[in-house]
Length: 85
Image 1 (cartoon, rainbow, N blue to C red):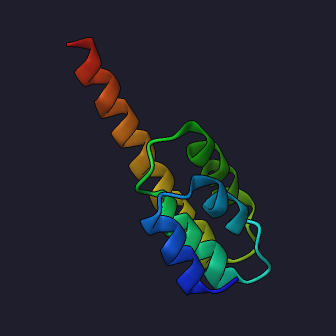
Image 2: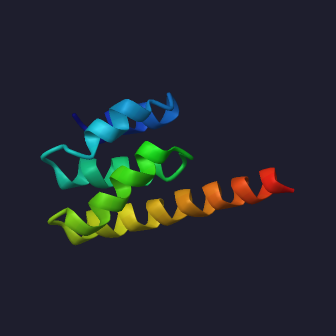
């Protein structure tokens, strides 16, 4: 897998492919997938990024996962608040 595959999956909204890319051997692929998943409001993405932000051995990947996780949490919280109005 390479970064262009990650970008294609993001464009195609391929959540399963991006989640699988979080397990890639290459840190740049994991980081790219983590960044791409920040645009999804999905519990599976939130949970996977929540784990990755603490357990990936590469700091850049953990940081990207953390930022994307925060984006998802904020978007989901905003959506829930909107629905409650």
